[in-house]
Image (cartoon, rainbow, N blue to C red):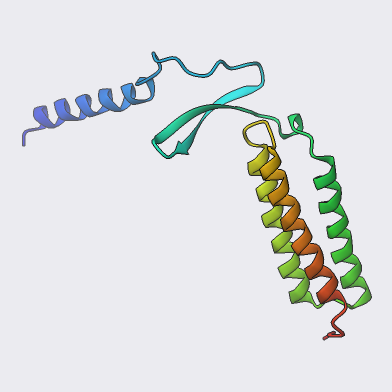
Length: 141
C-alpha cells in the first residue's frame, strides 16, 4: 500500500471516529435538569439513555445510612474488645463495602425504590447477624 492510500484511510477512519459520539443525538432523549448528566444503562433491548443525578446527596436514605454506621461501629468495638479476629473483621468490612455499593447503585437513578430498599435492608440484617455471631464465638487469636 502506498503512503497516500494509507493517509487517506487514516483520515477516513479519524472522521468516522469523530462522528461516532454525535450519532443518535438528533433523537429525543430524556430532558435534563440542572445537576444531572446523561448516562447510558444496559437494558434488555440494548443501551438506554438515562438522566442521572450527579450528587448522591439528592437521595436520602437515613435509616440505611444509620444502620451502616452502626454496623461499622459494632465491628470496631468487636476488634477493640478482642471478640473479632483481624480476618473476621476484614470479611465483615468487605461485606459492608458491598452493601455500600448496593446503596450507591440504588441511588444512581435518583430514586431508591421499595424493592431496592427491601433488598438493602435484608443485606444489612444478614450482616448484623454475622457481626453478632462472629463477635460472640469465643475465638480470639
